[in-house]
Each structure stands twice: as structure tokens, then as C-alpha cells.
Image (cartoon, rainbow, N blue to C red; front, side, top):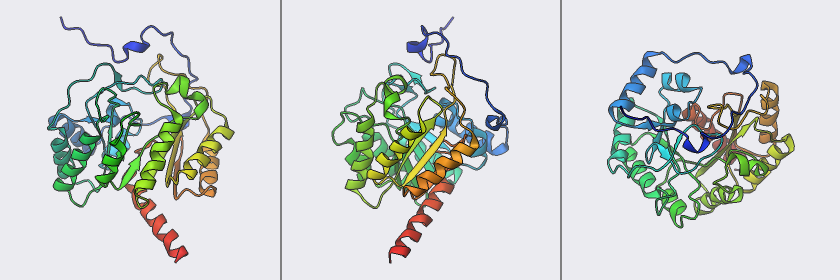
Length: 313
């Protein structure tokens, strides 16, 4: 009898982390639309991973019904062990050289106007997987020239030239999530470095000032409101255009506990504060995720920049 490997072996020995019960505003319907099933079946047929499934995103029914999908490349096993993430941790498989082509095929078949391409962390690769991102972008351009492309990359920590390679491939949006406030990195995102992630976003803008940059935060992990405001200031200093803020939800009892559920009114206050600090686009709500309805947000982001340039003109 085959043994199913543990999804998070590094967390198996840890005691359960108790979280408060979910409030009503976080309850969503189980996905079951024809569009959802068609997207799921196509991803299965093309042997593609989606962060929607791997990260147990609560918005999967809404997004897939609207034909919004976030493809996860570089395999399904991550070399990091973040305390918030549901993606499997362990020793990754060898890179699949045909994966970029299959992503392009899926985008063409689904007729997507906008696609988000993300990945697991691949600290085992010399370039952190940057070339795979480049090849995936090229495959999408070839299969679906009219589709806009958003990349949500890992931090490429200690991977010289990786950021430059992905920027040179000209995605429409370069997204990298800070995830939480600096004080909580040691317990929430121990394999990453806050200022390295911030530097990545700044480097993208320095390399190509016209490229849209984006970052996301989870709240409810134990951060203070003043710390969230400081992260906003740090992101604006790096000229980041778009900020997403959503409620952290605990994937399993072995993951980081939810410290509290942030109310919808508090999310509205965060949104107002972020706009006041100069972000072109802000999405902040309990169910906001970095890639949630990203195509609609990208259209608004472009319109916001056009309006800003018009005012300056």
C-alpha cells in the first residue's frame, strides 16, 4: 500500500494553533459553476498547478466562474516553510521543460484577458526559477498575444540576475508580496527577509519605471495598525503602484493561528489610508487575495495611471 507523503512534514510535530471561529462575513459558497468545472478540468488535462487550489483560496469559485485563474509554475512543492501557506513543502521535482508551453495552451483555450503566473519558491535552482518565468511569459505571448500578464514571483533571494531577467521579459504587472510586517517575519515568513523583498520591488521600478508593481499584505496575524501604515510608507518609497490587503485564514491547525478577524470597516479604513499615501490602486477587504479578480483590477490600474498622467499634463 502506497504511503501518502505529508503535505507539511516540518509542521507535523507542532501543537495545534487555536484560532477564533470565522465571522459571518468570511463565509463563502462551495464552488460548483459550469465555468469552475471547465477551468478545473482543463488544468487537470494539461497537468498544471494553480495557487487557487494549492493555497486553498476561498475565492476559487468566484474567480474561476469569471475565468480568472492563477497558474503556479515550477512544480507544486516549495523549498520554504512559511507558517501561513498551504502549499506543500519538501524536496521539489525536476523542472518540467514543457510546463511553459502548457500554460500558454491553457491561456489560449480559456480565452483569458489577463493571467497571473506565480510559483513556489525554488531555492534549489541557481536562478530561483527566473528563466522558467521568462519562458512562460514568452509562451503566453505566442499563444495569446492579447492577454495581459501579471507575475507574482518569489523573492529570488541571493539569485543574482533573476529580477533583471524577469523584468526584461516585459510582464504587464510585477507582483511580489511582503505578506506581513517586519516584526512578524521570524515567525510568519522565516525563510525570507523583509528588506530584501522591499528591495526587489524597488529594483523592478528602477529597471523599468513604466512597469506596474504590486504587493500584498495579510492582516490578522498579530500586527499593529501602525505597523501596517509603516509598510505602506515603505512600499510607496519603492514606488509600488498597487496594494492588496486581506484577512489571513489558517489553512490547518498546524499553521500560524489567526490572532483576530479584522472587520470590514477596518479594511475600508486601511483602503482610505493607502489611497491617501499615494497608491494608484488599492484592494482591501476580508476576502481580498493578491490575485483576486486581478484582470478587473488591472484595467482599473491602467485607467488610474492614465488619469494621473492626464492631470500632470
